[in-house]
Image 1 (tube, one colour):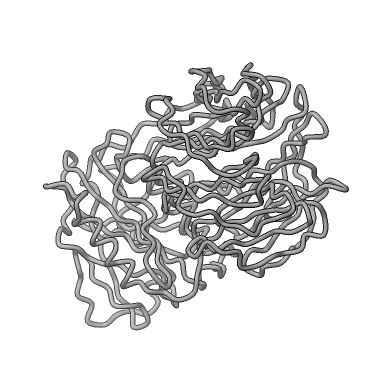
Image 2 (image 1 turned 135 degrees about the vertical axis):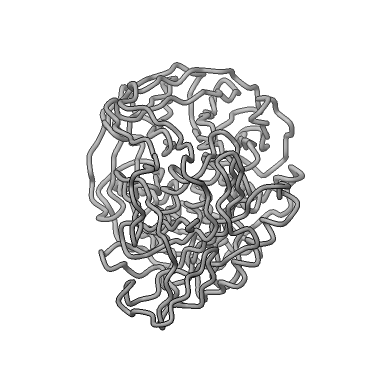
Length: 531
């Protein structure tokens, strides 16, 4: 039985070296013409500390962290029970943004009144360090898990870079204007900062450690990394700004009922949420760019955050001393056209297989080596005494790694898969079609999660590991599609290409404590084959 090979539209490939399904593999059926957007619904209000203003979510642990401004505390809510499980003393007057690093299980609370940053260990719900030396009313806060950095804005036009490993401030960047809140796109290594006097959006290049440009848009930002779009809650007018992250131009605005304060995004359900001090939450469709629902909440809603795994929305009500727990809606366009992945028994296998948004993957009968390709081992090797150099593109595009279980499992067998992603600096380059290589790899991996694996039934599981100068286990084996998509969005580029460390980490995950007896094991390495 041939191994299934998946490739994105661009010539940058990922290779599955263990076949994940036999003929007749049941693809997950998708609706044709889905119903219109579903409205969010209020689940409950959770009593927290005095004057809650900021909210952050750890989707990996389903914990919610709430900054209580007057109380000088952080409340920890268990997302499964909607109960407060800990109250942690932090600094004076915590600010409106709470940052969470799911991989490190750390939460960060910025203390506006004391000029400090509290570091909370999510495993123990205790403050493990207080980073000092952040004067001038620090306000904005964000984290970049891939770079292991935390970012703080201060009103004295200063953007401070904090090393998350050493808990020290390592660099200040001048933004030339007074700063407010921050949003980070870990895929592009850019940060977006709300400025005032006049209101603009600053774009900070995190790799170059410099302010790049300003966009004529006003408001507190949030980023959808899956589409490279920035959304701004305009605190001066009743509207939401939409900024194209590729061109850094204003792509449009959405009129709102009243001026919003903060904004959060839910990419899997195509929703944007804005909190309004007037007492409501707005849900905006990313597709139609219209308000699809409003929901009354408590008194003076402020901070808002989304758990992308289950679509729950959490809003801090500043004057009610509560957090509203909302089951988010589905804001996808009403006329969504989706395909049902199938495998046709009458279609012959092709020499190459591609994945596009409108066609299912096909199988390839053999794996072929060329003199310039890296060493490969495939489940069903085919001897080729005289390789033909033109059989595949001239540049090496993938490095398959074989495990002990290379056969195609029958349809009723479950599979554990490790996605191993090259995050070296070469992945910043472009494919032959002009797309960033890392973007093409992430898209191919997301296509695989959507079409090539049985996650919804829990039969199959996937882990995500990135590698560069070291291995980065971003997500252990899970059937939770939301966690996996979130992990793919955390892949960040660094120097070096230690594929051996990535493979070792993937092998450890597939054979470690989370392994399942009887599960087929597969490893998929996504790389351009370059250092």
